[in-house]
Image 1 (cartoon, rainbow, N blue to C red):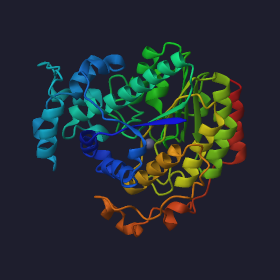
Image 2 (image 1 turned 45 degrees about the horizontal axis):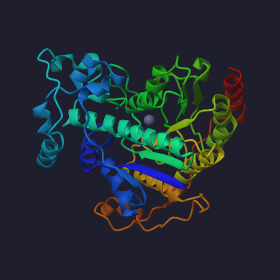
Image 3 (image 1 turned 120 degrees about the vertical axis):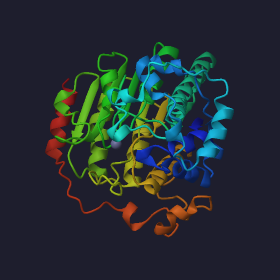
Length: 409
Ligand SMILES: [Zn+2]
């Protein structure tokens, strides 16, 4: 028996669409999941706003105050200004603002609110609900785990939140399109609710999950493991495997990583690290900017290959371990929507017997169908079914070297 939770909020979808790095992406993601009617098979968490002071569970108060500064002129720039404003006044009715006259937009740069993280319309509400989504999913999963212990009855629980996974944000600085670190807030929420939790965080985004690795590098109860592209000058310019320490592992890869190499890494390295740390809670960040179709063009993964690796990992670990899956990077909107919809589909399948190819190829009729016009309204296309011709610079020797180093720590 399995229970799947899914975060879904019309308001958060609209607010996430405003994020400059991911314009319109969230509508496509939530829209495609609903187009395939997968939401009907999940237990929906309709995200509710939280008091802003709860964000200090991880972040500094000064940073939060800067993030939530009223910026009405910027809000006006939204094409959806009226719709969003009306919804906000309904939903945020009871949330107290943290007004501080000392806070000034001229200090934005100090908090990373410039360059790749400049203020955008309705940012303060986006921050609130994004943090709330992972916090509320964590709380719901913890409640369920506690009730299961009481009943001596174990069944699988998987939580999905494609609004989350903002892994670059630090305590007092926005970075790399991440304004808030919902992951660290989620992990801290789990630690608070389940003091005996032993959490393993796996990051599969193309970029190093530095915000999470940094936050828990001294923690005995939170292990982080990031598989990413690493090179001098490649954002965030850190995360070589030699910088790893026990409990904070970096699997630094080169250009062209393909499905086979990722499979090898998961089976040979990650699974062994999971066995070593024996977690009782697994969090996977599934940023899909490593797909061959992504604008980055650094890795060469296919949707089927990427999701198969996640499926195998979930099948290989102890079935009683709760799993939280969070979004992350992904800059080809239609392919990101397809990737996470496909992932949701096979997670819903009771015992995963269904072949991963067995998926309705016609994009179902829904309000955003036109976005798939270039794909002939098909889910699978020539480009997303096959890797590109990019050379895989990751040799078995280079991967073996990382494996030996990490398993010796
Ligand atoms: Zn990324």
